Length: 325
Image 1 (cartoon, rainbow, N blue to C red):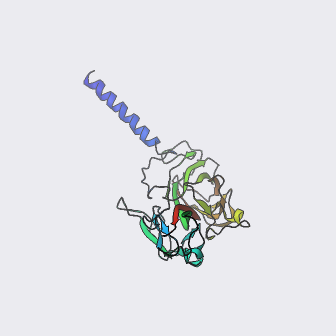
Image 2 (cartoon, one colour):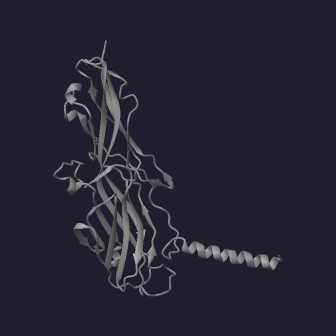
């Protein structure tokens, strides 16, 4: 192959790669954007502190111990003071010499989440929640018993996401230099047990913006309505379980009125809407339409999604009580 043919081949490959790069970002956008959030699907990571649960403990008041629950905030949201509740169960408090109030504790300071600073991820906030001393007060009639010690952790959390849509002065124009209306769009979700993904936009005519996205829960925790403190009963279970509060905001200069499916108790403002959303099998699809005022040019407005909720997770460990000599 001569030098001229080689140059032509290299040029052709370069053009193909360039066109491929332009189309890879989705929706016709040529902008290269970095994820502003730390990625992940966890909020609080919880565990019993090693050696805080004896193996075994002795009966008849012959030994004492302090249960400690370790909390690590691996998500992006800083949990405010008082918004983490740790409750112990699986035993009768009085048998261990403590009261009902002493087996429930709240963390009374902020617990920092993770973020990016100069491209580097910060360390997660960590804390031990330590309970008063326990001591099994009564003599056993058998050689030993095994209890299932359970720690239930309820905490308030928020998931944030930012996506990019497409608005055109002429929505039917075939000039896709800035962006393409119909198709999948870029969206970035913060590290949290609830994720926002699958942002899509549809062509809906002049002065209209139609888009949808997915809300999904990761992990085996239980989602509750924000502010419920995970205080579920048989009478309120269907009112608070699998409920989140969601706020959707588009660029304020669009000055549009947003309407969204699946939301209840909605409140609206200029370019914003909020309301409650129910997750079914840990998922929900939200579809929105926004009526726009005059659009003077083609551009990619941001859409912001904020989801708030209480999240409940549990851990357990065997607690062996042995008859003392």
